Image 1 (cartoon, rainbow, N blue to C red):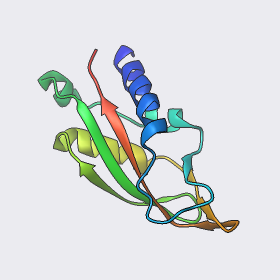
Image 2: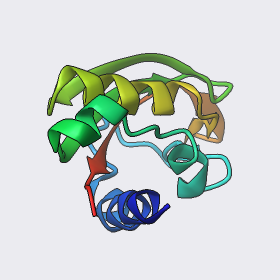
Image 3: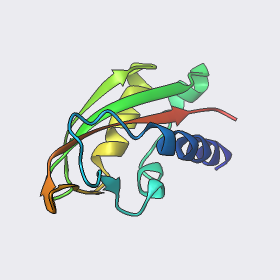
Image 4: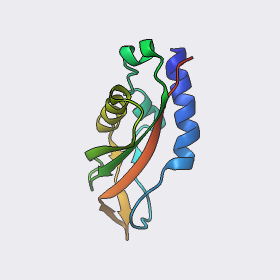
Length: 119
């Protein structure tokens, strides 16, 4: 539980600063439905990574469609295969509000960091 709280705290700190890297200006960018907690409840720190002491920040770029579904994910800054997969899986399981441009939902590209930190 303490590890999840550390992940959550670090994610909150970085999410507000690093929701970025959209190619076009939108009126409103995609947001996770249920807030940051919606993503955090989907993050599973792999036991093998814990046992090996692997920590770090995985940057995941993904596309959110007009209905808020995640279409694709890509790691743009890797830590390890295990943590990369855990971060992408968490994003894929999360539903988002779509990006808005000229009062219409649009596909949008988002890049966010997910921090893995052992206590």
